[in-house]
Length: 277
Image (tube, rainbow, N blue to C red):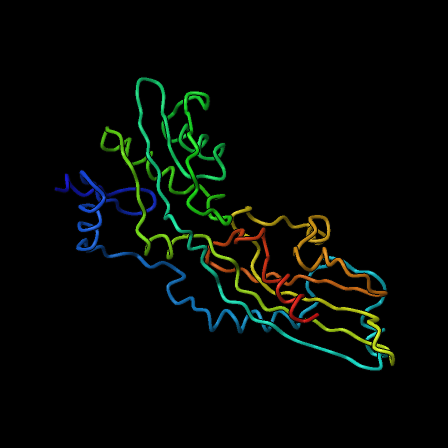
C-alpha cells in the first residue's frame, strides 16, 4: 500500500509506495490544482503562424557562398518548397527512471543516462556532497534517442530520497514521459533552387524557422553564432556543391523544452533536404 504523498518537489508532486503498481494507482487518483503559468494558452497553430512569419524575415547567417539570390533571378527554371514539422516526442521504449541510495557521506545512483557527469553533479549539489562522493551506474538505456542527454529524472529521485530518508526508485509513467520530455522543435523550412537551361543546379537557398535547442542553454547574442556553430545541421553541412548557396536560420522562441531528437539537433532539416532533392 502507499506510504503517503510527497509534496513540494521542485518539479511537482511525487507519490511513494512499496511498488510501482501502487504508485501508479495512487497517482491516478491524485487531484492537484496547478498554476498553469504564463504559457497556458500556447498552442501549435499560433506558433506555426509565428514560424511562417519568421521565414519571411532575413534571419541569421548560417552559411553563404556566392550570390544565390541574384543567380535565382536569372535562372531558367526555379523550384520552391516549404515544409512543416510538428513538435516531436522522443517516446523511448523505457520511460524515465532512476534508482538512488544514500549513506554516510555518499550517494549511489543507477540510471539509464547519456550524461552521467551531469547526473553526478546534480545529485552532489542537491545533497551538499563532493562530486566524487556520488557514484553513477549507467544501466541499459531502453532507448536513448537524445532524450537521456537530459538527466531531469535523476535530481527528482535524489529529492525524494532526501525527503523520505530511504532508497527510492523513480519511474515516470508513459504519460509523464510524453508530456514532460524534451521535444524536437517545430519547424518551417523553405528551400529554393535555380536551374539553367540544361537542368544543372546553379543555386540553393535554404531558410529555416524554429526554436533554438533549449537544453543547450540560452543562445548567445553573437549574430554569427549559427555560422560558427555550423547550425542548423542538415542545412549548414549540405554535402552537395552549388555555385551559390545560402543558409539562414530564423529563431522563434518557444516555451516548449527542446533538445536533440533521434539524430543530433535538427533531423527534420535533413529530411526536407532529401525530399526536396
